[in-house]
Image 1 (tube, helix red, strand yellow):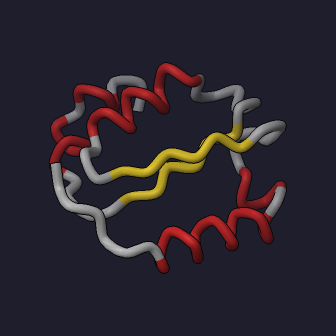
Image 2: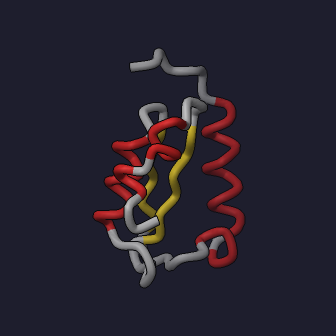
Length: 79
């Protein structure tokens, strides 16, 4: 994943994608998240303050809410 911004696999993702990132993630910093966001054209990015690498374990209710909101959003026009 360290090369995710230029990864052909990431660029090939065409489905709406929600990227959740805990800003205290010791494994992947903001540069990785920004590269991933840029590579996946149809992505949405949410920064989660005070969370680490596993926000779904740290605040499961908040993550579930964000996922539900993302699923309920109307589709965006593709860039």
